[in-house]
Amino acid sequence: MDKLLNDLVAIVGPSGVLLGDDVSQRSVDWFTGTPCRAKAIVRPRSTEQLSRVMALCYQADQPVVTHGGMTGIVHGGMASPDEIVVSLELMNQIEEIDPVGSTILAQAGVTLQRVQEAAQEIDMQFPLDLGARGSCTIGGNIATNAGGIRVIRYGMMRQQVLGLEAVLSDGTVVSSLNKMLKNNAGYDLKQLFIGSEGTLGIVTRAVLRLQPDMPSEQTALVAVPSFDALTQLLNLVSRELANSLSAFEALWNNHYKLMATESGKHAPVLADNSPFYAIIETLGLDEAEDAERFSQVLQKALEVDLITDAALASSQAQRQAIWAIREDIEVLVNELKPMFSYDVSLPIPSMQAYVDILEENLEAQWPQSGKMVVFGHLGDGNLHIMITVRDDSPDSRRQVEQLVYSPLKAFGGSISAEHGIGLEKKDYLSVSRTSEEIALMKRLKTALDPKGLLNPGKVIALD
Image (cartoon, rainbow, N blue to C red; front, top):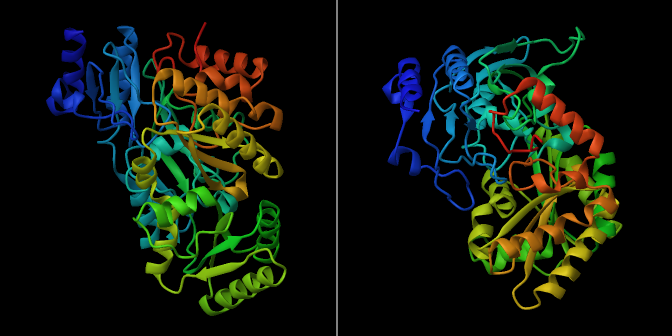
C-alpha cells in the first residue's frame, strides 16, 4: 500500500493525497455524519491524472470509492479501511459555455448551483434543481440520475446530459462529449454511466443541455381537502398550465404541520388543518400575463372545491418562505432523529393506499414511538417518506425497511425514485427489478469492471 500511495502522490502531488485525520474528519453520509474510514483520499485535477490513478489501482487490485458532494443518503460513498476514495472536488471548472448551441461543458466537481449561475449569466437556465444545489456536484447528479423539483417539466438528469467523459476501472478514458441533440451513431454509451452510482466508471466531464431563461415565476401554496382532490388538481393544472407548469409538490398534513407549526422554524403560510397541501409553480416569459393565468386557474380550482385556501407569492421572499417548508430537510432530521429516510415511486392513483398501509403497519408495530411524514414530487410519482421509531438499531432499521419496501411490489412501485441504491437498498433491488434485469446488470458490471474495483458492493453484488 505504501508503494501505491507514493506512486499516487507522484501523479497528483502531495496535496492531492489526504491521509490520517484529513480523511477521518470528512463524513461519508449527510444524515449521520459517519466519518470516512478509507486508507486515503486521492484528489486528481484532470481526467489524465485520474486515468493514471485508476491504471495504478487496477494493477494493484485496489478498490476505489468515488466521492462527489456527499449529499446522497443511501451510503453510496461509504468506504472501508482497505479502500481508496477518489474525490473529484478539484476538478471543478466550467470549461466552455455555448450560448448558440445552448450547452455548457463542466467538470464533474462543479456544483449544481455554479452551473445554474453560469447559465443565468447568458440569460439561460440549467433546469435541474434540488435542495442540495449548493453542495451536490454535476458528477454526483449524473452518477445518481438526480431528479428534484422540476422533473415534471424538464425530466431528470438523464435528459440534461448530451455527452460525457468517464474513466473506467483500468484507466481507459471513454470520451463522448457530444454536443448534438441528435446522434444515432450506434449505442448511446453515456447512458451506461448515468445512474450507475460510480460502479461502471467515474464521470469526469459532461456536456449539459441548457434551456431558455424563464424570468416569470408564479408560486402558490394551496390547501387540498382530499387525495382525490389532489390528483384532480394535478390534472387541472397540468392541462390549464401545460406550457408553463414546472413543479407540483405534495405535502401530507404530517409534513406540513411538523415543518410549519410544530418545529417553530417556519411561519405557517396557511392554517395547518388541511389533510394535504401542494406547492404549484410555473415558469414563463410574461409576468403580467402569466400571473393572470395562474390566478385564474387557482380560482377555478377553488370554485370546484379542489382547494380550500391558497397563498400566492408576491415576492421572492414569499416564494422562498413557501419552498423552505418543502426543502428544509435539516428541520426534519432534527425533529425526527433518529430518522430513517426513504425515496420511492409508484403510480399516482396508488399513492394514498400505499401510505395508508404504511401508517397502519407503523401504528401496529410502534404504537407509542412511531411517526411518519410524507411529501414528494407528486407530478412525477415520487414520494419521500421519513420515519422515526425513536430507535436506530439495526433491527429497527430492518423492520422499517420491510414495512416501507414490501408493499411496493404489489403496486408496481420502485424502491428508489431518484436517490439511487448504494448500500442501503441493495438487498431490496429485487422488489423493483426482475431476476433477468439484475443478471444483465451484473453482466454489464463484469464487462466494464472485471475486477469489481469500482464502488465495490454498491448497487449490486457480483457473485
